[in-house]
Amino acid sequence: QVQLVESGGGSVQAGGSLRLSCAAYGYTYSSYCMGWFRQAPGKEREGVATIFTDGVSTYYADSVKGRFTVSRDNAKNTLYLQMNSLKPEDTAMYYCAASFSPSCFGPDMRSGRGFGYWGQGTQVTVSS
Image (cartoon, rainbow, N blue to C red; front, side, top):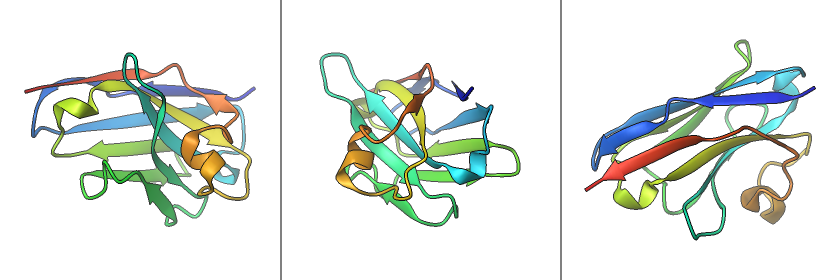
């Protein structure tokens, strides 16, 4: 059974940094495309970043490019999201997700529809 557990969320002032982690259990982690998504109250889910099994190929939403970095440690079965220069508009619940898809970067993957496994989420709040 696939289980994803996020951690690292919290409250920070604008301009600050946070590092989210997502520990994966119950499957061959390195075989999966992984992604980070977020959803703010009253807004649709937004794809933040995805990363292929090689740990090199990545996708970022335009809203986070240059500020966020996605990475994975296949030996530790863990996905990370380093978030720098945080803005109030980054406030949301952040979710990690996993997929068997051979591609990490098509429209379905960027939207989250292509991901079948999800964590419970971790809240990020950025104050101005």
